[in-house]
Length: 117
Image (spheres, rainbow, N blue to C red):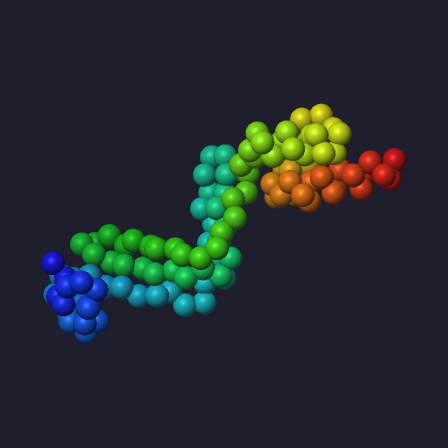
């Protein structure tokens, strides 16, 4: 149970308890970007808040802030771009990859490309 209960936590007392348990928490300053790379996609955080916590020899990081997902292309987006730009689903997929999975940008890019022919 946290001292004070019901959200009335005394920060100094909480820090003291964490120190007694050997838990150290610090905010990492000056973080510009964090990227989590998965097999099929990347999560990119621009200017996130990153907190590091060390307990029992393990370091854990908490990342918070706005992020975008790169690499994942939704079927609905492929269909939308294909229909709106009047192109094949394969061309729509290529355009979405080029435009960071932004359907509106992909449609505009395809329409501009088509108008230059």
